[in-house]
Length: 332
Image 1 (tube, helix red, strand yellow):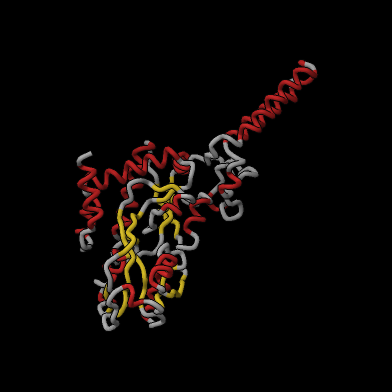
Image 2: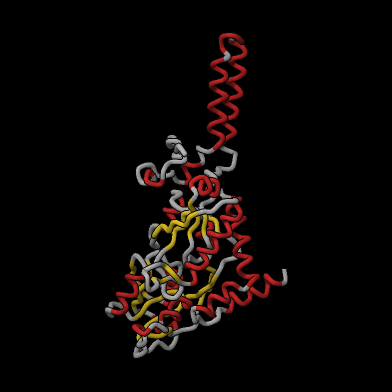
Protein backbone atom coordinates (compact mmCIF):
# COMPACT_ATOMS: atom_id res chain seq x y z
CA UNK A 1 0.00 0.00 0.00
CA UNK A 2 1.33 3.47 -0.91
CA UNK A 3 0.93 5.98 1.90
CA UNK A 4 -0.45 9.40 1.07
CA UNK A 5 1.76 12.23 2.34
CA UNK A 6 0.15 14.36 5.03
CA UNK A 7 -1.45 17.62 4.01
CA UNK A 8 -1.00 20.91 5.82
CA UNK A 9 -3.70 19.76 8.18
CA UNK A 10 -1.76 16.57 8.95
CA UNK A 11 -4.47 14.38 7.46
CA UNK A 12 -2.97 11.76 5.17
CA UNK A 13 -2.39 8.14 5.99
CA UNK A 14 1.16 9.01 6.92
CA UNK A 15 3.41 6.23 8.21
CA UNK A 16 3.49 5.93 11.99
CA UNK A 17 7.15 6.91 11.93
CA UNK A 18 6.17 10.29 10.51
CA UNK A 19 3.90 11.17 13.42
CA UNK A 20 6.64 12.84 15.38
CA UNK A 21 7.72 14.94 12.41
CA UNK A 22 4.18 15.65 11.23
CA UNK A 23 1.99 15.57 14.32
CA UNK A 24 -1.73 15.51 13.81
CA UNK A 25 -2.98 18.98 14.78
CA UNK A 26 -4.85 19.92 17.90
CA UNK A 27 -8.63 20.17 18.09
CA UNK A 28 -8.41 23.88 17.34
CA UNK A 29 -6.57 23.18 14.10
CA UNK A 30 -8.74 20.19 13.21
CA UNK A 31 -11.82 22.39 13.03
CA UNK A 32 -10.32 23.90 9.87
CA UNK A 33 -9.59 20.52 8.30
CA UNK A 34 -11.51 17.37 7.39
CA UNK A 35 -13.49 16.16 4.40
CA UNK A 36 -15.01 19.58 3.77
CA UNK A 37 -11.62 20.98 2.70
CA UNK A 38 -11.41 18.66 -0.31
CA UNK A 39 -14.93 19.50 -1.44
CA UNK A 40 -14.28 23.23 -1.24
CA UNK A 41 -10.99 22.94 -3.12
CA UNK A 42 -12.67 21.02 -5.96
CA UNK A 43 -15.48 23.58 -6.15
CA UNK A 44 -13.02 26.45 -6.45
CA UNK A 45 -10.88 24.65 -9.02
CA UNK A 46 -13.99 23.77 -11.00
CA UNK A 47 -14.97 27.42 -11.06
CA UNK A 48 -11.60 28.46 -12.44
CA UNK A 49 -11.56 25.74 -15.09
CA UNK A 50 -15.04 26.75 -16.21
CA UNK A 51 -14.10 30.41 -16.63
CA UNK A 52 -13.28 30.43 -20.33
CA UNK A 53 -16.17 28.38 -21.76
CA UNK A 54 -18.84 29.64 -19.41
CA UNK A 55 -18.03 33.31 -19.19
CA UNK A 56 -17.49 35.75 -16.39
CA UNK A 57 -21.00 35.50 -14.98
CA UNK A 58 -20.66 31.75 -14.51
CA UNK A 59 -17.30 32.27 -12.80
CA UNK A 60 -18.97 34.56 -10.28
CA UNK A 61 -21.60 31.89 -9.66
CA UNK A 62 -19.02 29.18 -8.96
CA UNK A 63 -16.97 31.54 -6.81
CA UNK A 64 -20.03 32.47 -4.78
CA UNK A 65 -20.84 28.81 -4.21
CA UNK A 66 -17.28 28.13 -3.13
CA UNK A 67 -17.35 31.06 -0.73
CA UNK A 68 -20.62 29.85 0.74
CA UNK A 69 -19.09 26.44 1.25
CA UNK A 70 -16.10 27.98 2.99
CA UNK A 71 -18.34 29.90 5.35
CA UNK A 72 -20.41 26.81 6.05
CA UNK A 73 -17.44 24.73 7.15
CA UNK A 74 -17.25 26.57 10.45
CA UNK A 75 -20.70 25.29 11.37
CA UNK A 76 -20.04 21.64 10.41
CA UNK A 77 -18.88 19.05 12.96
CA UNK A 78 -15.09 19.01 13.05
CA UNK A 79 -14.86 15.25 12.59
CA UNK A 80 -11.29 14.09 12.46
CA UNK A 81 -9.94 11.30 10.31
CA UNK A 82 -11.94 8.08 10.98
CA UNK A 83 -9.44 6.28 13.18
CA UNK A 84 -11.15 2.89 12.88
CA UNK A 85 -10.75 3.06 9.11
CA UNK A 86 -7.13 4.10 9.53
CA UNK A 87 -6.48 1.10 11.78
CA UNK A 88 -8.11 -1.15 9.19
CA UNK A 89 -6.02 0.31 6.38
CA UNK A 90 -2.85 -0.07 8.44
CA UNK A 91 -3.81 -3.52 9.72
CA UNK A 92 -2.81 -2.51 13.24
CA UNK A 93 -4.72 -1.24 16.27
CA UNK A 94 -2.64 1.26 18.24
CA UNK A 95 -3.55 1.33 21.93
CA UNK A 96 -2.10 3.88 24.33
CA UNK A 97 -1.47 2.35 27.72
CA UNK A 98 0.70 3.03 30.75
CA UNK A 99 2.38 1.39 33.71
CA UNK A 100 -0.19 0.32 36.27
CA UNK A 101 -0.07 -1.39 39.62
CA UNK A 102 0.02 -5.19 39.51
CA UNK A 103 -2.09 -7.15 38.85
CA UNK A 104 -3.93 -4.58 36.70
CA UNK A 105 -0.91 -4.39 34.40
CA UNK A 106 2.48 -5.93 34.92
CA UNK A 107 5.10 -8.04 33.15
CA UNK A 108 4.89 -11.83 33.16
CA UNK A 109 7.82 -14.25 33.49
CA UNK A 110 8.64 -13.76 29.79
CA UNK A 111 8.68 -9.97 30.11
CA UNK A 112 5.38 -9.56 28.27
CA UNK A 113 2.58 -7.25 29.48
CA UNK A 114 -0.16 -9.04 31.39
CA UNK A 115 -2.88 -8.32 33.92
CA UNK A 116 -6.53 -7.33 34.00
CA UNK A 117 -6.17 -4.22 31.83
CA UNK A 118 -3.94 -6.05 29.36
CA UNK A 119 -6.47 -8.88 29.02
CA UNK A 120 -9.19 -6.32 28.26
CA UNK A 121 -6.96 -4.66 25.64
CA UNK A 122 -6.45 -8.00 23.89
CA UNK A 123 -10.19 -8.73 23.93
CA UNK A 124 -10.84 -5.24 22.54
CA UNK A 125 -8.37 -5.95 19.72
CA UNK A 126 -10.09 -9.22 18.86
CA UNK A 127 -13.58 -7.75 18.87
CA UNK A 128 -12.62 -4.74 16.75
CA UNK A 129 -10.92 -7.12 14.31
CA UNK A 130 -14.21 -8.97 13.97
CA UNK A 131 -16.05 -5.70 13.46
CA UNK A 132 -13.86 -4.54 10.57
CA UNK A 133 -13.72 -8.04 9.07
CA UNK A 134 -9.95 -8.49 9.16
CA UNK A 135 -7.24 -9.27 11.72
CA UNK A 136 -5.77 -6.22 13.42
CA UNK A 137 -2.34 -6.53 14.95
CA UNK A 138 -1.93 -4.99 18.39
CA UNK A 139 0.61 -2.21 18.93
CA UNK A 140 1.01 -0.80 22.45
CA UNK A 141 1.98 2.87 22.70
CA UNK A 142 3.53 3.63 26.09
CA UNK A 143 2.26 6.83 27.73
CA UNK A 144 2.38 8.49 31.14
CA UNK A 145 -0.12 10.74 32.96
CA UNK A 146 1.46 13.87 31.46
CA UNK A 147 1.34 12.90 27.77
CA UNK A 148 -1.50 10.36 27.49
CA UNK A 149 -4.19 12.81 26.35
CA UNK A 150 -1.73 14.58 24.04
CA UNK A 151 -0.82 11.30 22.32
CA UNK A 152 -4.50 10.47 21.96
CA UNK A 153 -5.29 13.87 20.45
CA UNK A 154 -2.37 13.58 18.03
CA UNK A 155 -3.74 10.29 16.72
CA UNK A 156 -0.79 8.19 17.85
CA UNK A 157 -3.31 5.65 19.10
CA UNK A 158 -6.94 4.84 18.39
CA UNK A 159 -7.88 4.32 22.05
CA UNK A 160 -6.39 4.97 25.49
CA UNK A 161 -6.86 2.12 27.97
CA UNK A 162 -5.52 2.90 31.45
CA UNK A 163 -6.91 3.63 34.89
CA UNK A 164 -7.89 7.10 33.62
CA UNK A 165 -10.86 8.45 35.56
CA UNK A 166 -13.88 9.52 33.53
CA UNK A 167 -14.72 13.00 34.87
CA UNK A 168 -16.77 15.92 33.49
CA UNK A 169 -13.63 18.04 33.09
CA UNK A 170 -11.87 15.36 31.06
CA UNK A 171 -14.93 14.88 28.86
CA UNK A 172 -14.29 18.39 27.59
CA UNK A 173 -11.00 17.12 26.13
CA UNK A 174 -11.78 13.56 25.02
CA UNK A 175 -14.68 11.16 24.60
CA UNK A 176 -15.15 8.18 26.89
CA UNK A 177 -16.74 4.86 26.07
CA UNK A 178 -19.79 4.42 28.27
CA UNK A 179 -20.03 2.70 30.65
CA UNK A 180 -16.57 2.62 32.18
CA UNK A 181 -14.88 -0.71 32.80
CA UNK A 182 -13.74 -0.31 36.42
CA UNK A 183 -13.99 2.20 39.26
CA UNK A 184 -12.00 3.62 42.13
CA UNK A 185 -12.02 6.37 44.74
CA UNK A 186 -9.40 8.48 46.50
CA UNK A 187 -7.62 6.99 49.48
CA UNK A 188 -4.32 7.20 51.38
CA UNK A 189 -1.62 4.53 51.19
CA UNK A 190 1.03 4.70 53.90
CA UNK A 191 3.19 2.56 56.19
CA UNK A 192 1.25 0.50 58.72
CA UNK A 193 3.20 2.28 61.46
CA UNK A 194 1.83 5.68 60.36
CA UNK A 195 -1.30 6.75 62.20
CA UNK A 196 -4.03 8.19 59.96
CA UNK A 197 -7.35 8.26 61.84
CA UNK A 198 -9.41 10.21 59.31
CA UNK A 199 -9.10 12.74 56.49
CA UNK A 200 -9.11 15.68 58.92
CA UNK A 201 -5.99 14.31 60.60
CA UNK A 202 -4.12 14.97 57.34
CA UNK A 203 -4.49 18.76 57.55
CA UNK A 204 -1.09 20.32 56.96
CA UNK A 205 0.49 16.94 56.14
CA UNK A 206 2.18 16.18 52.81
CA UNK A 207 1.04 13.37 50.53
CA UNK A 208 2.60 12.27 47.26
CA UNK A 209 0.37 12.21 44.17
CA UNK A 210 0.61 12.31 40.36
CA UNK A 211 0.62 15.86 39.01
CA UNK A 212 -2.47 15.11 36.92
CA UNK A 213 -4.58 13.70 39.76
CA UNK A 214 -8.14 15.04 39.73
CA UNK A 215 -8.24 14.73 43.51
CA UNK A 216 -5.40 17.09 44.43
CA UNK A 217 -7.26 20.42 44.35
CA UNK A 218 -10.48 19.18 46.02
CA UNK A 219 -8.57 17.61 48.90
CA UNK A 220 -6.34 20.64 49.29
CA UNK A 221 -9.46 22.75 49.70
CA UNK A 222 -11.52 20.27 51.71
CA UNK A 223 -8.94 19.00 54.18
CA UNK A 224 -5.92 21.30 53.88
CA UNK A 225 -3.70 18.50 52.61
CA UNK A 226 -0.41 19.50 51.01
CA UNK A 227 0.88 17.61 48.00
CA UNK A 228 4.22 16.72 46.45
CA UNK A 229 3.54 16.13 42.75
CA UNK A 230 5.24 13.59 40.48
CA UNK A 231 5.05 12.68 36.80
CA UNK A 232 3.55 9.23 37.30
CA UNK A 233 2.61 6.48 39.73
CA UNK A 234 6.04 4.81 39.59
CA UNK A 235 7.65 8.03 40.85
CA UNK A 236 4.97 8.32 43.54
CA UNK A 237 5.66 4.79 44.78
CA UNK A 238 9.38 5.44 44.96
CA UNK A 239 8.84 8.68 46.87
CA UNK A 240 6.64 6.87 49.39
CA UNK A 241 9.22 4.10 49.80
CA UNK A 242 11.89 6.78 50.34
CA UNK A 243 9.71 8.46 53.03
CA UNK A 244 9.60 11.73 51.11
CA UNK A 245 5.97 12.16 52.17
CA UNK A 246 3.60 10.72 54.76
CA UNK A 247 2.04 8.49 52.13
CA UNK A 248 0.41 8.50 48.72
CA UNK A 249 -3.04 9.63 47.69
CA UNK A 250 -4.54 7.72 44.82
CA UNK A 251 -6.97 5.04 43.63
CA UNK A 252 -8.17 2.71 46.36
CA UNK A 253 -8.48 -0.16 43.87
CA UNK A 254 -4.87 0.21 42.76
CA UNK A 255 -3.39 0.64 46.24
CA UNK A 256 -5.46 -2.18 47.74
CA UNK A 257 -3.97 -4.46 45.09
CA UNK A 258 -0.47 -3.06 45.69
CA UNK A 259 -0.73 -3.76 49.42
CA UNK A 260 -1.01 -7.48 48.58
CA UNK A 261 2.39 -7.50 46.90
CA UNK A 262 5.16 -8.94 49.12
CA UNK A 263 7.44 -5.93 48.71
CA UNK A 264 4.70 -3.66 50.10
CA UNK A 265 3.71 -5.86 53.03
CA UNK A 266 4.50 -3.07 55.52
CA UNK A 267 2.03 -0.65 53.87
CA UNK A 268 -1.76 -0.44 53.85
CA UNK A 269 -4.75 1.54 52.63
CA UNK A 270 -5.63 3.88 55.47
CA UNK A 271 -9.04 5.41 54.76
CA UNK A 272 -12.34 4.61 53.04
CA UNK A 273 -12.45 5.95 49.51
CA UNK A 274 -13.97 9.31 48.63
CA UNK A 275 -15.08 10.90 45.34
CA UNK A 276 -15.41 7.68 43.29
CA UNK A 277 -15.29 7.73 39.49
CA UNK A 278 -15.25 5.07 36.75
CA UNK A 279 -12.21 4.18 34.67
CA UNK A 280 -13.07 4.89 31.05
CA UNK A 281 -11.59 3.98 27.69
CA UNK A 282 -10.80 7.34 26.10
CA UNK A 283 -10.96 8.28 22.41
CA UNK A 284 -10.17 11.42 20.46
CA UNK A 285 -13.27 13.48 19.83
CA UNK A 286 -15.04 13.13 16.51
CA UNK A 287 -14.97 9.31 16.28
CA UNK A 288 -18.66 8.31 16.51
CA UNK A 289 -18.29 4.88 14.87
CA UNK A 290 -15.32 3.85 16.99
CA UNK A 291 -16.93 5.27 20.14
CA UNK A 292 -20.12 3.26 19.55
CA UNK A 293 -18.12 0.09 18.86
CA UNK A 294 -15.98 0.39 22.00
CA UNK A 295 -18.98 1.28 24.18
CA UNK A 296 -20.77 -1.84 22.94
CA UNK A 297 -17.74 -3.99 23.72
CA UNK A 298 -17.50 -2.62 27.28
CA UNK A 299 -21.22 -3.23 27.80
CA UNK A 300 -20.60 -6.82 26.73
CA UNK A 301 -17.78 -7.20 29.27
CA UNK A 302 -20.19 -6.23 32.03
CA UNK A 303 -23.06 -8.35 30.71
CA UNK A 304 -21.04 -11.57 30.33
CA UNK A 305 -19.12 -11.10 33.58
CA UNK A 306 -15.66 -10.97 31.96
CA UNK A 307 -14.34 -8.30 34.34
CA UNK A 308 -15.56 -10.23 37.39
CA UNK A 309 -13.84 -13.35 36.02
CA UNK A 310 -10.60 -11.40 35.62
CA UNK A 311 -10.87 -10.10 39.19
CA UNK A 312 -11.06 -13.70 40.37
CA UNK A 313 -8.21 -14.79 38.10
CA UNK A 314 -5.88 -12.13 39.48
CA UNK A 315 -6.95 -12.37 43.12
CA UNK A 316 -8.52 -8.91 43.29
CA UNK A 317 -11.13 -8.00 45.86
CA UNK A 318 -14.58 -7.72 44.25
CA UNK A 319 -15.30 -4.19 43.04
CA UNK A 320 -18.81 -3.18 44.13
CA UNK A 321 -19.27 -0.85 41.15
CA UNK A 322 -18.32 -3.61 38.69
CA UNK A 323 -20.77 -5.99 40.37
CA UNK A 324 -23.51 -3.36 40.06
CA UNK A 325 -22.74 -2.84 36.37
CA UNK A 326 -22.91 -6.60 35.80
CA UNK A 327 -26.38 -6.87 37.33
CA UNK A 328 -27.60 -3.81 35.43
CA UNK A 329 -26.22 -5.01 32.08
CA UNK A 330 -27.79 -8.45 32.43
CA UNK A 331 -31.24 -6.92 32.93
CA UNK A 332 -31.07 -4.50 30.02
